[in-house]
Length: 95
Image 1 (cartoon, one colour):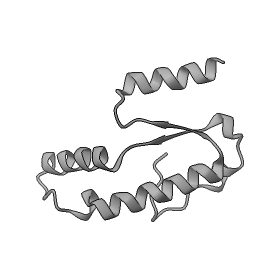
Image 2 (spheres, rainbow, N blue to C red):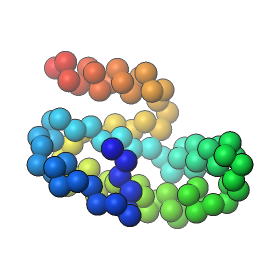
Image 3 (tube, rainbow, N blue to C red):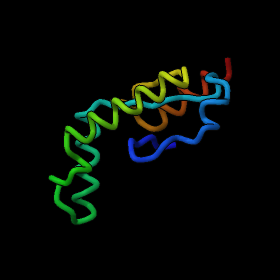
């Protein structure tokens, strides 16, 4: 579930066991790179607020606060492939 400052997460997210949640975090630099490429592929300017450092730092700080409130495990996906992240999550739930 995406966590963005403009939308409050559903209350149910805070009621389930933290062991059933995995938070994903990414470095601001990597997220800027991803978003800039996404904007270019859509034919939009890379300078959009969506890819600005200030916007991204705000989003990441907000999501960090939410994940701390939930108390869930957090995985840094900055330099991980989707398959690697899936394997880490799968291993966690197999324990």
